[in-house]
Length: 201
Image (cartoon, rainbow, N blue to C red):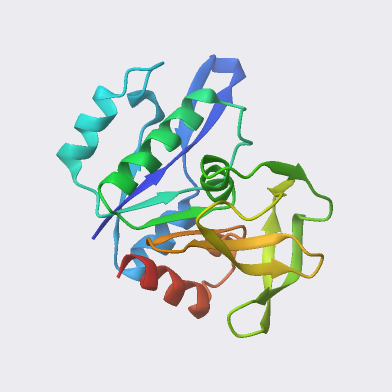
């Protein structure tokens, strides 16, 4: 199964280069589960021209979409536009979608939520509550912003011990968002692996 993965943008000042990049740990996680990662270049979309990106998607035929973390929304409009287009294309094609951290924020914004600044969620671990079974677990955290409310057509599935939204899922479609990073655990957690498998099959 091919999972198309979005990439962060890094500006290398001394070379005057904008580079797409991805955490190698995320690729290792996807491969360890048995999927084939397919990295999406941000440069396929330029201004309002989406034809090149659409042709690329049709040619490569991803079976699932993963909107990765990294970069604040608004930092690089090229990435914002790529991920917004990709999300709408995935919905049209009825493909499963997982948004990690920034990826969940993108999904939330598309569905009408807004971001708010939060404290104590960068390079931290905290307790989250699974609202479906009232079980607590500990998750990593690397974000300065959270969704202010639950997006339209979604439900909140996890909240942090300080009341922030930590995970969401669509009411009808296979679309999920989480604020923690499964790839940043020293050893990938079985709980996270099973969760990702449940999304992509």
